[in-house]
Length: 543
View 1 (tube, rainbow, N blue to C red):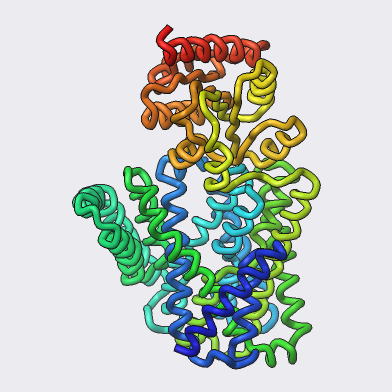
View 2 (tube, one colour):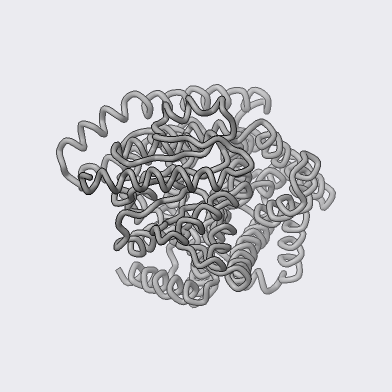
């Protein structure tokens, strides 16, 4: 009980302090763990129970990621994105492995070290993306795709450790066996999640018991994770696949709300255990080596990813941001290196400890850089409003307004025109730069994906008189229109399309009126919006 209380006190205290300092809670949890760990104040001696809970945090994170992505979005990444992701993993692992062999490690050891250090931290990267408001941008999509490929690679790497340690026979046979088992298990998880889970969730929801529904959610997450673990794959992979399958159900938002508290607390404990495991005495004795490895890893991975992104035609700034964002080590590296030490593949525990400290340092540097970057963005461009509760509170008094989805040039011109006429306006956009730009024009623009039902509910769309979808992407606009129409059947919907051929599809999605892209798109949208707004007003008054 005493150690539990100590962990919780440090958890809360460091989270609050570092959040107030705007340095990010990840860095706070790492430092808090170091402070109370065996090499710090030695307030915590038994790490295994806390480490188990921390590993569950990674599982819940991947399940949440699957809920957010959906299978439909997963397909939209494109071949070039996956080519970049796969090439990054292979090239980085080969380069780091070659350097490790040059420094004196055996070929088998170098192979595992290269594979472990090629991975990036899903937890840190997603936290930084969320803090910067970049999750739904092109940078966020690229980073998430690369992280997913890396998570998939964890399974074969775990098998490879066992094979190289002498317990799995020939390498090719071991990897082939892992591939077959993994394909079977993932297929079963997909089948159960898609066809059986909706029936189970419907049955459980009929009871009307929050406790039973939450317990069922936990069973889904942990059951899928256990299935892939038994197959020798990553527990996080099973959780991700289950989340991906549940994402298309009508229970997605309730499930996300149920697991949010578990995910937040368990992820915090994970980072605290990483800090607790750091041997400060060893780190001080080899401080130069630790710093050299950490900075070398950040520089090498960053440059490799930047070069690959540029070679595949990505813009300079995007390639630089991507290289900086994914240059750190991964939480899965701790698992891989620990398993290699346990099986005897890596015999020098000091080497594993030094690598672990260096990886933790790279994670802390990335979190710190993200916090500094967010402060710079806020100082230069103003804060982006990303909270749904904030959105709900700020729009609570709005009534009979026009909701505009998309704050590009067309959306901005439309919003300014309507405001000039005295019509109340609310704008949603998921590009943080657009949101910050709105402050210069004194327009009520909020960060949010209008294709998400929870965002539309938080924006109180049900009280709007008209919704204008001004997104330039036809598929994105159709998704927003379809979601809004399903939630609010009587809402007037006006949409923008790039060409005449897109008009039938947009009307089929539920748009009442459609404006085709042209030289006067903003003016045409404004004229049609005013007409629909006045028509809706007449209908509301019965005139």
